[in-house]
Image 1 (tube, rainbow, N blue to C red):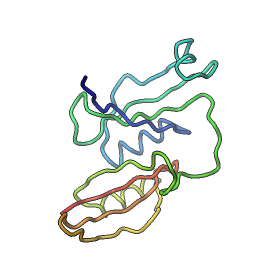
Image 2: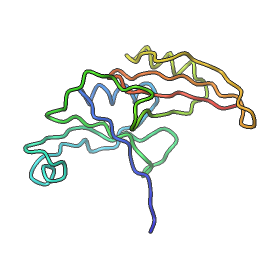
Image 3: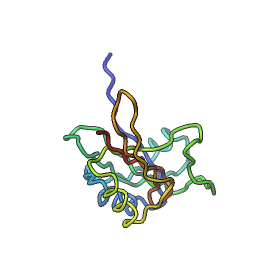
Image 4: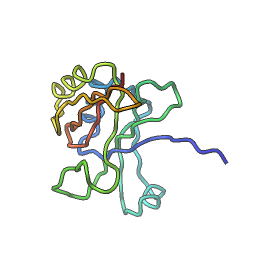
Length: 150
């Protein structure tokens, strides 16, 4: 039986604004149509009554049509949490992008509403190469790793 990775989902406060962030900063491409999911079938899938989910899939950079996507959805009702995602919290942690120039994309992230989480660091890893890496946050606090290996 064949298995293929399809997407990673982010639940957003404002799906259009967050999608635009990933388009502007990392060059993700919209995969249409936009989603507007509601009705009995989605109530049954989510286990929620009268749910409505809106959003879009974004093709990740470096992949052709049919490649994995970043699915950015917004629910009509969201569970509230005052805690931002933490780098060491159990569960899904972050999305990572391999880029040619970490500083360029980090500055671009900041200019588009993202924020810092840690410092940009360069470290030689024996037997692997030189890693340049930084952890940051998108405008909704989700963690992004920007990295380069030489």
